[in-house]
Length: 532
Image 1 (tube, rainbow, N blue to C red):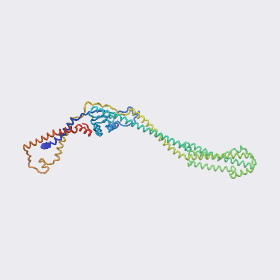
Image 2 (image 1 turned 60 degrees about the horizontal axis):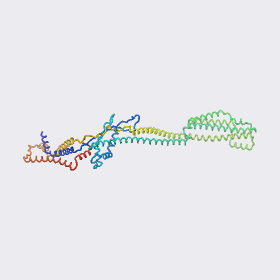
Image 3 (image 1 turned 135 degrees about the vertical axis):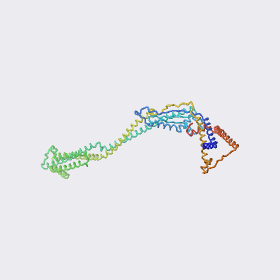
Image 4 (image 1 turned 60 degrees about the vertical axis):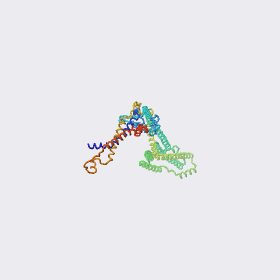
């Protein structure tokens, strides 16, 4: 109880500080509450509508969640350019000509309230827009401008996204088409330049190789037979002096020996093996050795069974001898026929050798050409796959662009239009006056507590004991005369009257002659971004 009376005495001693602070705050809040102009507030509600066409049938290319779409719209709405444009278009503020752009933007943002609710699973997000102004008509007009701006920007955003996607895939399809054409031209030029070494004709060329190899063997055999026949004709004439062998008998080929038949079979096996295996294959090497051995045996047998074929010098000598000796006409015709056939077979052999050499070269180059062609084909197939995918995506992009162009996709719709308010919603004059007065009283009490905490001088015996460790015997109060008490009380009354009357008068003078308190409060609210 003693502490209560002690603290009460301290409050009474510092009461003038409390009274000054509380009176100033009360006067300011009451005058501001009475002088603040009425404020009207209008409200609009928007909802993100689901696509009108099911995504299973045709999907839009603009993939943005409803909540994300509203957040994008919110950020675009309160941009500096939009705030300035709407404020100047509708003359939202009476003194807008005296306000700089920063003040206009700050005031517009402070009077605009945007709230987004919902957005959870299976819950459509809803955006609420409110605007506060001193005129009821202005609030509805500003919100209508907001709604037009929101829907326009949303449509432009979605159509721009779908258009950009469509243009991208159009360019991608054109690029891949050009690359496909270029790659196709390169493959065609490569095939034309290497037509004799392509892998597609390898089997045919291997068969041709075997045919020409057999042809060379047959030509060599025919030439050998013709030369043997010519030698027999000459020998027959030299022995008998007559050319009794008829052309039919001379041109009739002799029957092949068993060694020659085995040689032909071995050569056929070798040619067939070469169509499948390379010359380095062990099977091919065995067949080649067998053919070589059989050829050697056939040559030996031919040397034993037939007269020796004269060499070139012998043929030249025989020709000179034939030229010196007059031969019968029949023999001359037969020898000329044999020589013509030998010459024709020699020409055929040269042509066959040239063709066989070309075939061998092409077959040897086929693996290299195959590798290069496969690489070019793989690149072409990869480009073709990319082109098909791009075509599919282009089709989807065209469908999505049509959906957005016709406004059949996800869009923002207004479910509650802004109405012109009939009653002001702000300011809450009771709250402003009462709150300001209560805040002033709390501020005055806080000042008294602060002053006492800063004053450490002892005032009670307990303070002397606590600070000096001395217990006083007794305390003698300060005694004042009646005149001193009257003067002290009069001074307090005068001070209280001066505070109660003078401070409100000073605040009112500021309101009249310097700047109205409603404008001061409005600027403070614009700076803080809150409305009372």
